[in-house]
Length: 607
Image 1 (cartoon, one colour):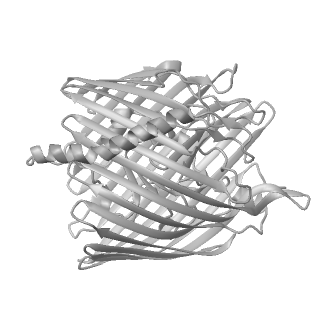
Image 2 (cartoon, one colour):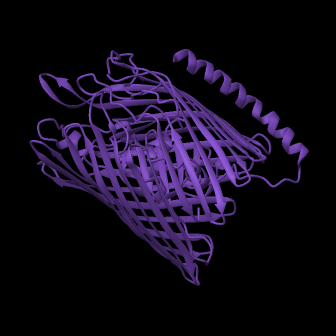
Image 3 (cartoon, rainbow, N blue to C red):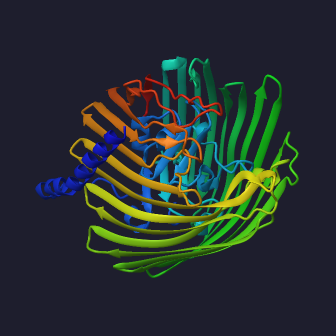
């Protein structure tokens, strides 16, 4: 597999290097052709709308067309193989999943839904596997530290999912129904529109599957998920706006030895006021919940966490410059069957950001102060410089700090918590260059992240508990590109990551070091064809690097046919060659098996 990965990376790098010449020739021969939006507007990188080349960050945008073409079962499936992103799963269909961005831990990546953070306060990570991609129309992946914008845990990066936005005054209904392998059924529907100054969007989805075995010789482990979304906003004549969002996912997932009932929920209300022509003020109240009830043959355990947040943000624009000043207060609460020494904590933060345009030079600077009741004060900041070499190429460099907060399990879990823990801290240097053309983009970045005071459960002086013990150095490089030529759409990503534990010299566990993803789609009138190839090299399941998990390569194929106005059908075949692969092991050394070949077909209206 290593030879295959290296060969594939070389071929892909050659192809990516040749793309600008091919696209330039195409652009020269058709100078009046309409440009394709390969430079999308991104809001997550700076908390303000900027095109991808203006963000001065490494970003990936997965738009609605990408989500509908690929139609993944889960968010981890959607993110797998994207630049700088590594996925680890304990099986398929709703099983525990981790998202590693740039080699950092899954609890060092922030997940947002329309600006509201979702995570478990006990484990620190998000339950990525319980969010249905059909509930969203867009995803933004920002790689690199964003602690000065989003506070704790934004060490490796931030993923933001955006719910459906109403477009136009006419009602727009959609419905999709389908079935496939492992006795899987999927159903989803949306309704959006606007009337006067009011916009609305409603959505619902249901997935039910018998699943597959997650260990050799085991029984199939099922999964079901029912999700609902309601979103409304009203804009007044003076430009003021108020809005509300509610999203809830509820279901059950089975595993060896038991099953889990889960609830994932976000809700928020906001008000935005244009105080003056150049001063906008926005106030947001939100709540996020992560609840689970674990049933085994001998016990029942429950964990319920919720985070309530109030945020006030002010944006001032003067000439070509923009300043952001604000404050945020949040409170975490935990409850359930585990008796934590503390069951709540609050965090108060103030922050500022400057987005300065001295064309061709751009400067972005941000600073944030957090005061947490549990682990004290943290200051994070960032500075990014960008320079337009010409109309198509932008050089950027940046430095940023971030921290990962100790979780309730780290601090207070009975018998294992350590109330003297410090937050993990990091600093990252990055340099990159982006080429942006009418029909092509490419982006190359290299970085180094140094992490201190990693939190690990280990034995010290006869006590097994959470301690600040390790340091890590993560080096990496990413190359991504995309183009649209005639009816072809191509996307490619190459990732190299070297996540090293500096105390032992070993690779951080469960991280691959090399990754490749190629996506190719073609429109043929009413028919569309496409496929994805995802390949990764080996990883180690243990910190000692003794338990090796082999690399793998997956091929996914898809086809669509619009057989009548507003009506279409779609077929996807995942893991076409039925590869056996695993990204984690059980405690006894057995592999967590992922699904083999799987086919799904759907009938769609309005999509």
